[in-house]
Image (cartoon, rainbow, N blue to C red; front, side, top):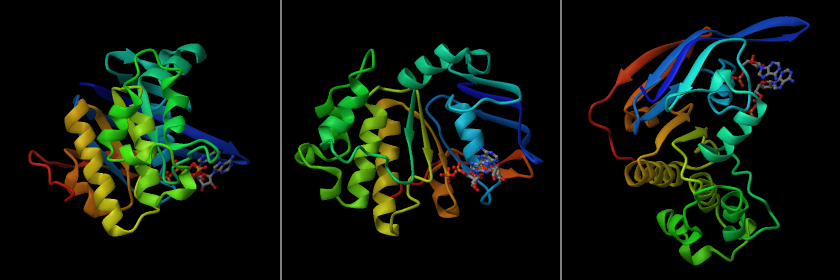
Amino acid sequence: MFLSVSNLTKSYHTGIVTHVLKDVDLKMERGQIGVILGPSGSGKSTLMNIIGGVDRADGGTVEVGGEHITDFNDNQLVEYRRERVGFVFQFYNLMPNLMVAENIEVVSNISKKPLKTDEVLSAVGLSDKKNRFPRELSGGEQQRVSIARAIVKNPKLLLCDEPTGALDLETSRGVLSLLQKVNAQFGTTILMITHNVAIAGMAHVVFRLRSGEVEEAAHNSEIIPAE
Ligand code: ADP
Ligand code: ADP
């Protein structure tokens, strides 16, 4: 297994105790696309943040590519986030005062073995926009830049939290199609949070979060192209 989450637990203590993740198990093979479904507040972001090394679990284990990241110290987690995981968010999180190419180079400049800026720009279909500022781009184009920024470090794992949450249906299809292309072209394992059940059709494996536990909802041998 490329990604193996076992017996993961996480609670928040804010006056009252919220058991967000009670006993979460989740497994993915290398090169798969996985989708996490579940209602708002069910713990999807918390789970993804722990897998991405930006939050820590209370108990249980997360193994990524043979590494036990739940045993990592803070420095190891920094290195893991910097080199081996890419993140894509709903609202792009681009630097407004940097041009497209510069936004990507913020990441490649601190990576050990980055891909070339031109290669990722070409992969996301934005070679002609490299000297534009984010505000000069549409929402879909900004999300493509954020995907380019996430993949320039050539991560083994790409984590996407509601990547189409701010986009209309047609633009969403384009972004999902791009993620499928990234998965095929670079062999990147992709785990994506979404509210959109239709998106589940493009995944190899679908997980549903319920009451702090995960059930595997579907396993598709044939994945459906987004467009
Ligand atoms: P989802 O992504 O499924 O919407 P989250 O993982 O964001 O769910 O949140 C799960 C639960 O944990 C929610 O009840 C939320 O309010 C709570 N929660 C998330 N982050 C924190 C935090 N830093 N402190 C306290 N409670 C939190
Ligand atoms: P998102 O990932 O959608 O930007 P967050 O992860 O920041 O949202 O928060 C998800 C949920 O967790 C929200 O419902 C938010 O109110 C709750 N939450 C986040 N941080 C805290 C906190 N420090 N205390 C209590 N609830 C929190």
